[in-house]
Image 1 (cartoon, rainbow, N blue to C red):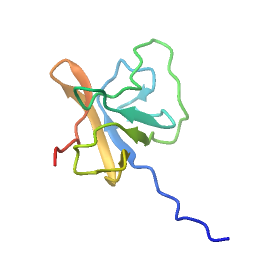
Image 2: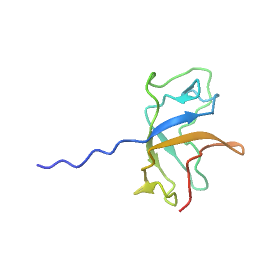
Image 3: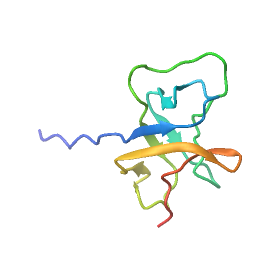
Image 4: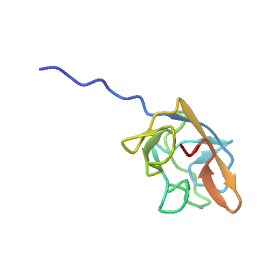
Length: 100
């Protein structure tokens, strides 16, 4: 049996969404986030809450990306080495999103 290469999930290098339950000191601690909806590169995993969660001390990663038109996206998977999450107008978005 041959095994397929394992894809390394891109790390979230910084997140400025301080009100997110997974954010601790500008670092996302969700095991994996989902990026995108029908209209924008929104962080679909964002959850506003006073209780902090996630898997500290590890930084979060991108589990899935729905932004098929991004140059980093292949087969709905992000292939950027790292992403940044932050505010784009009033939404918390993937700031690494780059339409092809």
